[in-house]
Image (cartoon, rainbow, N blue to C red; front, side):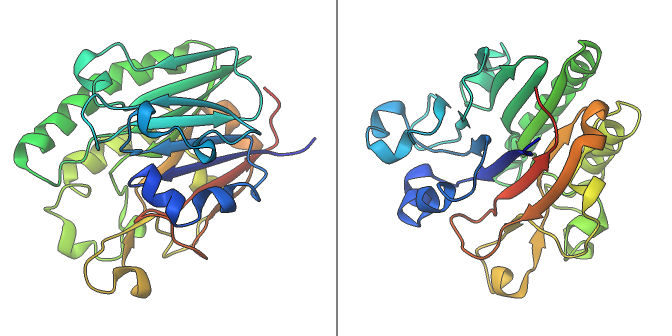
Amino acid sequence: MRAMRVISLNLNGIRAAARKGFYAWLRRQRADVVCLQEIKAQLEQLNERQFWPPSFNCYYHPAEKKGYSGVALYARREPDEVIQGLGWPDVDAEGRWIEARFGRLSVVSLYLPSGSSSEQRQQVKFDVMARLTPYLRRLRRDGREYIICGDWNIAHTKADIKNWRGNLKNSGFLPEERAWLDRLFGPMGWVDGFRVVNQSADEYTWWSNRGQAWAKNVGWRIDYQVVTPGLREHIVAAKIYRDRRFSDHAPLIMDYDYEP
């Protein structure tokens, strides 16, 4: 069985990433599903052929606000169903969830709000986390397998952030945020797929544009593929691609020996 390859990347603007060579790189990756976040574009701004790669079925869920947020999902095999949004008008207006269903498997592109811009946005983030808790509990009981890819905007442990001491009071590494991931990966039963097969230190997916963060690898691991326990044994490989830079995030590439 050929491994199923799933790639997740926050593009920080799909048009900017395209100019940096993202689509040329993607053609060589043999991906089966690609989950994109922060596309920052409306559909009418994506008329060029490069945004609709012919080897994929392409689905976009942009934010209502121009130049903001938005998620997308590319699937080599046509999904049985595609679900845009969570049914929460405020969250769906920001384009933060798109789900493709293949048999008993769902692959999701998720973009959790950031709280770094203001205290108000941090409260929005906490509110979305609170609402996701019962929702994710229900998903665990519905008999499907899930791969929830995306920018969760939280570094879970000290191993997932270079300068953990200096960020204890900053959004993305707050005690309440990390405790939420403790529950997610603990009693709620979800699995941090990357850490199942890759325990390496200094593995980050996002770097500040300030200073020499990228060059010095002073980063955060805030992009995940969060999976149901039934997929744990099917994870073959996980790596973060750093040879070229398309965004302030790096692609998270995972392979699964799973046939939906």
